[in-house]
Image (cartoon, rainbow, N blue to C red; front, side, top):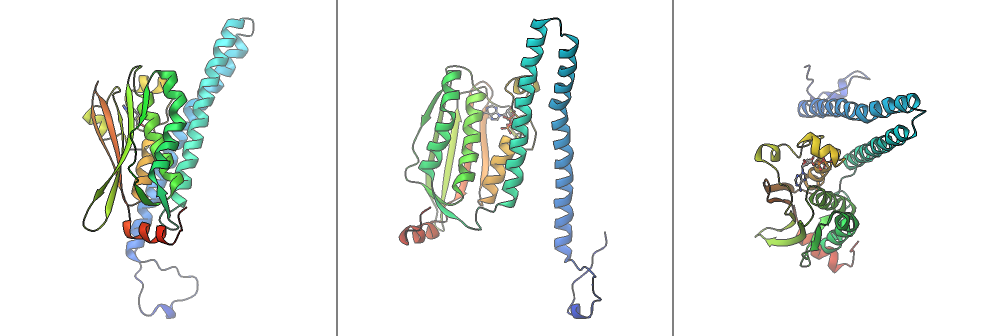
Length: 274
Ligand code: ADP
């Protein structure tokens, strides 16, 4: 690839010549390649439900004399359009996240509130599935970042914990602050006693569109984007995600983010809490 180097004689360059620093150029190539992959994956993923809906529409036309069949096909069209709607809204979430740096205009985020929001959002679903959802407390944890993004991340983890569990399972959501000499880390954990994940799958579940056991996952109607959104949010807060799991036993997902303690204290002191 051609690489132009920015020199001290930049003023002598003719008008309209674009000069890019070598590092920026390689980075921009990488970003462009990731973007191309993403667009290819998105088109592939969108084509599946769209294809199913148009086949079902044909089937409905052909079965016009058979009300039972029409009802059945219509039901499946409903399922496929719901899946399409989920995909579109998660793709929009992902692209919004990429444009929205949580540390550009950080707020002091009360993790208690974040966990409560996530648990509240999943409570009805958990009840319907016979899963017990418990809030284990956040012990006053606070971080510097974006409350809405962190709620999305924790919500995705709780949603998964509820979905990938059988009736009778338990899900616990909690957070702890771990002190270090430099700064504190806040560790948010979502633990379930659900179906668990094999170690081979665990290595890949944070990739975009990756789903375990197609049959079962598809039955649950997911998109394979939830965990890549979680990973993106953790990373843009300067943190990371992790998972511990055993098949048949359950899983514990962890988001660890730096608290930026000094800034949190200063903001609290000035009464700037968001
Ligand atoms: P999906 O929309 O399929 O849930 P995610 O990115 O959220 O997409 O998750 C990717 C895959 O990881 C899921 O399809 C599922 O197989 C697996 N997974 C995620 N969370 C859990 C969990 N708590 N227990 C078991 N498997 C899980």
